[in-house]
Amino acid sequence: MIRAHMATYPVRADVLPLAVEDILSQVDLLFLTLNEYSAVPEWIESSPKIEASIPTEDFKDVGKFVHKPGDDDVVFFVDDDIKYPDDYVERSIYQARAIGLNDNVFGYHASTYDKDLEQGANSRRAFSFKRRNWSVEYVDQIGTGTMIALGKNVPPLAYMRGSQRFVDVRYAKWLFEKAVNLVVLPRTPRYLDERNSKNADDTAIYETFTKNSPRAVVDEIRTFAGKSPLIGKKVDKAQPWYS
Image 1: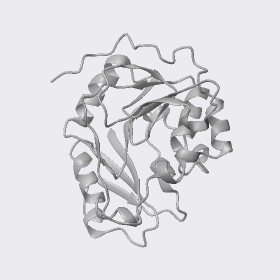
Image 2: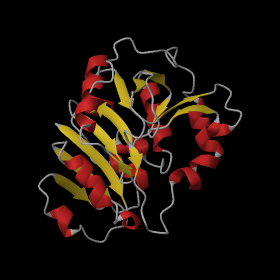
Image 3: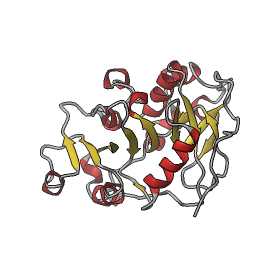
């Protein structure tokens, strides 16, 4: 199965249908966690390709891990505030399978950390999903809004609990412990882009949390940052960006 996992909350109700529309036709099923909702909206409930759930607690971005995939499923972790092109799934699988899905996890928004982390979580080389990138290389961390993985390489909810707003860090830690590599994929400029909500209460995690990550989060980063000998090396089996 090719599946997508997304978590959302009511503040982004204006952009959610657009994000769902982007990805739904490209996957077999979308697993959607509706944080803070009191009921499943009718347009979601009536879709045969959406499996929606309302958790008993506010999982925030950890909600992407509520639904457990099968080991051989191809999982696309997606966000409600990113624009996905209509060839996103096809192009991503093409690249991932050429390199090898078994022992690698892939994505378009990534980081390679400085070993000393003198400036905390900001001590890094960032690969923004909005910018052009021709380099296909091993990285320390991938953002879960642009991530592709086999189900067997997805951590259980029990491991991800408590990592609200820093799921990328916790996931990278788990992958390092499992000896699974992370690979950043190529793209043209604005291949992926932001989709901003008009709700004034919507705030980006980077501004409210990541920019000044707590010491505990930085300590988690230290458990894997720069530890793999592959970090920064090019991936030999990468395929050229095709038209």
